[in-house]
Amino acid sequence: MMDIIRTKDVVYEYIRRDDEGAVTGITTAVDHVSLGIKQGDFIAILGHNGSGKSTLAKHFNAILTPEEGTVWVDGMDTLEEKNVWNVRQTAGMVFQNPDNQIIAPVVEEDVGFGPENMGVPTEEIWKRVEESLKAVGMYEFRKHSPNNLSGGQKQRVSIAGVLAMKPKCIVLDEPTAMLDPQGRREVLKAVHELNKLEGVTVILITHYMEEVTDADKVFVMDSGKVVMQGTPKQIFTLVDELKELRLDVPQPTLLAWELKKRGIPLPDGILTGEELVQAIKDLK
Amino acid sequence: MSLIVDHISYIYGKDTGTPIEALKDVSLSIPDGQFIGIIGHTGSGKSTLMQHLNGLEKASSGTIYFNGEDVYEKGYNLKNLRSKVGLVFQYPEHQLFAETVFADVCYGPKNLGLSKSDCELRAYDALRKVGFPEDLIFTSPFELSGGQKRRAAIAGVLAMKPEVLILDEPTAGLDPKGRDEILTQIKKLQKEENMTILLVSHSMEDVAEYVDRIVVLNEGKIFLDNTPKEVFRHYKELEEIGLSAPQVTYIMHDLADAGLNVRCDVTTVSEAADEIVRALSR
Image (cartoon, rainbow over all chains, first blue to last red):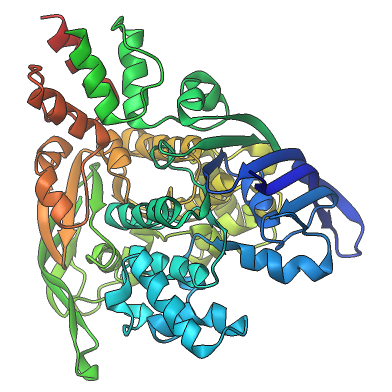
């Protein structure tokens, strides 16, 4: 199957200038990244603050375009001006702070804003609003003011707003960083359902390792480069290497690792509490 | 000495027709040198309570005693309270504004009317205490990484020499190492300076790892107030109010259900490892 997103040797630099406009420093945020993301996959991108993951993600819907190299979204080169609209429609983006993404006074109007801007006929807009809100479990709140929603609910409205544009791919940049445990559970459940039921490709950027255990593939970034890629099992076996990169592993994996250090013969690649409990049961 | 919250309630929007009671009869005694975690879902009243502790909000009823003095008494010096009870807001780096990190940290003490050299001494001291890299002290705060900005902002509050430090989600948006670094530094402030710390957090794992006591808020009321072990014993009730227990606590319960003889009141990874090894070797 064709890759929904493909990048080849992508480079992006932030250039700092002084008051006169002279260059005082250059940070290479994305450094020759080449990768492919399969349609329908659930992808996670990990990396410490400043590793370049958000800058890379912004290339996936043409908020940024590469200074060197190429990004193709559903076969469209993001550098070509004529593609920008279609690229943004193909790959929608959700950010960290829900309060910066919701604009309308009523939930259903907010969700309808995207398709309306795309020139979708009114009847079709309402159909999409209904479907999108149902997909994230927020339909019963359609007449509410976003102000009265919890963080997790607002974030699900943001996701519905992207869904209403019928994207093939949705990029979420730390969507749970500001949420309480309940909010995090809600958002992750919604995102997983989109992926499974609607077949939307999901690209999740996060600092919470346990959100990544169900992903099809994980990319780990450092200094603008992809330094590891593989399944969660393959990645989270590398506990020491991840700690080097200022990252971590899910708590059950860490516990398994601690137990192994203390001489308990557990298998590699334990990611969840259930797997750990099963492995310990198998010992007996 | 200490902070005592004595039956405070707080109602806002009284004149809008739909008044909201954000705090309902909250009482809390905060002794010196304790590290307290405050948890509760979004809108449970955590931030409102914190804003009462340093006098940014005034309770509708009840009162607060700081070091034995009623802070709502006529003539009480609220400016003093605000410098002694330091509040670090969410995303404090959004409030950095000066040309250099050093100037930014000096700003607070300068407002207290201290001499230039005293301000600078305090700023150096505060930056050292948060583990800020020395070679970056005179750079612009806008050129720093997320974790460094966060430290600079916390140093700005520490430079006021507070006795109580309140931090509202100080690790939101930081990578795992950054989270550990900030929390370890905060723990050090408690240990070495005997500072009282209140940490508002959405991470049950972080709270379990670092604090001595947890206060759980729900709908403006205190729901639980006890040690992490005791609080996370009530994991089912916590789930009902939008919270959870650390993942290891669930693992211990599952192991016990599977017939392994382990204690379930375990809240950290190292404790869990010890407990499982002990149970398996019997």
